[in-house]
Image (cartoon, rainbow over all chains, first blue to last red):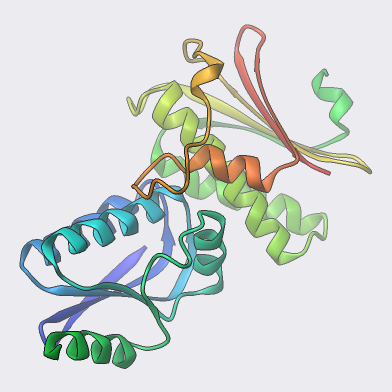
Length: 115
Length: 137
């Protein structure tokens, strides 16, 4: 797994690529939780995630719950077919906010900030 | 059943019980099933199931100690595709191997659920080594 981060409007976009498994999911988890600790919203770009297992899903769930507790946004963007299938298997495909694009995710964050 | 009754053996490999070994393990499963002309989606599901069963061995049987080994065997016959995972860790209470309530949204605890959903047969044997048998018909 590889990752990169970009910052847009106080939201960190974490782009994950490759395989998220027991060896690499701790890296994703650390990036997510550190960003939230820094009081920044998180969008996870997942178009090029080729494989994700239950440990990867656990990292996403932990991020989602931590964001909720901190009253920050956490969403998934452009999820790959592999990710979609595993989320559905875990019955989490209707739990996470999922966006087709980063701009959609940012628009939602901006809209909620003005409410 | 003895191993030979599962059909043609496609693979018999040994791995150290470490997270880093899951990448070559997944490659093994993919390569074996591609040679047998299974379709991509099916292979993806089998890779996930075997990976989850292997994770259980690493995390729970060997308690993440990075010690120990486990074996993975793959068999196929006309009716069934079978994966046998053998570990040599101390016995566990089979009653503790269960999936959790998915309505309780929290990290972790999904591995057994994934295996049960993806495979038609899941057996935990003690012979005395521990064997997890998962298969798809």
